[in-house]
Length: 216
Image 1 (spheres, rainbow, N blue to C red):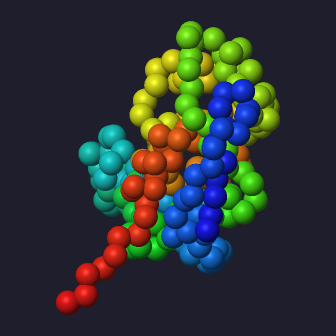
Image 2: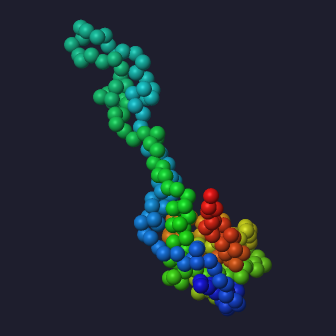
Image 3: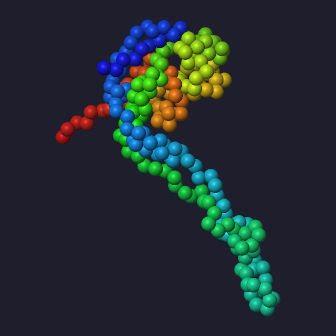
């Protein structure tokens, strides 16, 4: 049985909730987590570096001099790689595909492993919700202080978008908002502490509990 304490904004425990072991109580396999991290980072990688070859650089349409009789080496274009301002040979191209395939079950399993590890280390804080009367960052910092999270690098997940909360944390460089239905392994590992609302926790349970495979 896996239990999570739920706090209010004042840092007081108001109740406990039993959460599925299939999400927060699985065995962590570093190899699977690494595969998910490598795949996600590779799939986000953009091929920006690009050099032009001799067919792409401008100019060079005319033969610089006639083939014979000048005493100089023969050339057909001033945009040859051996000329200044010519094309680049074997330079980086933006056509490289860096993507890495990983099946959905492995990716979701890695996510559950990271969540389980966070729970084991006591890095998950569940709060009932946020009652924000204004957009002041100072007030939200007071909430974090009550939850003993002020100054810590953390990710916050809400059940649904809350403009007041997002505005309040906009000036907090160590706080990163991520929707509860958009969790990923890289961000969970990047931000050690995880603050999630009770509504967000329900969304996570509903979305990430493994579905039973029907036998034929």
